[in-house]
Length: 226
Image 1: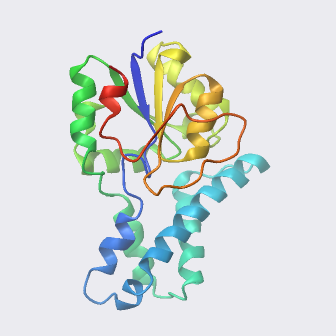
Image 2: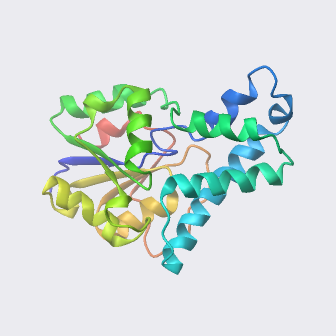
């Protein structure tokens, strides 16, 4: 079947999850963060993801905003950053993360080809709405789907089921794009065509399936779907 629907993970795929720490580190009065912001950003993201997996496995769901705060608290403590104003500023910035520069044009190109587009994310509806609005890409997305509708995080199959339910398409009509190798692999095993956006040049996760295509950014997505 030809691809009719292009679905994107949000955080790390369309939106730069390092942007909050990087931006705050560049502001006056945050020299302590400036000295370690890359570590804070990396620890924050890692713990955010780990906590989604652990909660899903244990059946102890909490929404992604809670998980995001928990991950940040770990990251700040790991770098001995104790100021409450730093924590609050980072959380505030997370609601308006920058989109990667190629995102608006890439989405516009997909829409010009008549393809359905959307987001499938662990993020809460409110978080995703804030990020989409801040990036100015809402008019280029048909649906923004949140796992809060099913109460479990990726890579549970019930999350990927949401795409077919929202778009009325078959699994092999979907191109699913994620910056998380495990997410792209799980979606491939589910039956989607998949792209792993491997911006950091990481090794591929050893899982039950593998992404169909690996790219370094999103620029050529419209070419992949023809």
